[in-house]
Length: 227
Image (cartoon, rainbow, N blue to C red; front, top):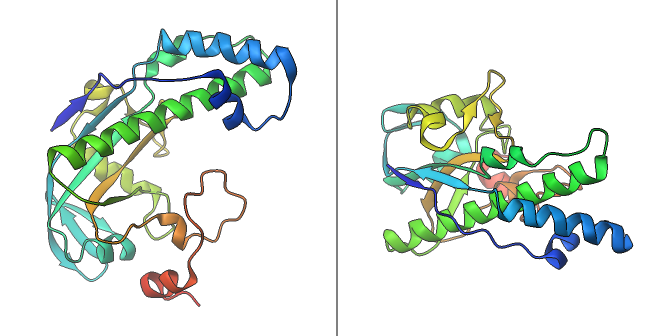
């Protein structure tokens, strides 16, 4: 198991404003973004933890990773020819909660939430690059509990159990409703693959701002039998 807690953070005003998609809001929004960037750069400590695990007991729509059972037809299919995987948890870091937002100021709250999301993406990118380099992997893909109905959010409990106390490791707590705190955190499993896989390819949800790939009906039929 390895903790990554020295993840670099790079933010610039133009990039944040583009991600916000607010259009031309003039000097006010630019000043607000610049102040939040300064606060984030002086506060943020994104983190990630991962471990090297092994897949066994593949049976029907289920499998075990380090002796922990997961049930998902898609996960099972993706790991059909895979023996070694990399469960992980990544977070923007609870330190960003120290950045205060004036009560009722929805614009500042939205800007800060966007910055937190961007920092989480930096942590994920750093983690995936680290795994590829350290283990001499080519292409890797990932799946996250809750990203598809086929792999429900409740299975975060099993995923977290692989790490023991994630709160002690990187400050991430799994709540009773299976969401994480800090909210800008993510858990999942990286696995080597010859063809890039994204859960979005099997998801029919329209207008999703987090979409990474278009819905692929042929792939949906292959994995889920969708018509």
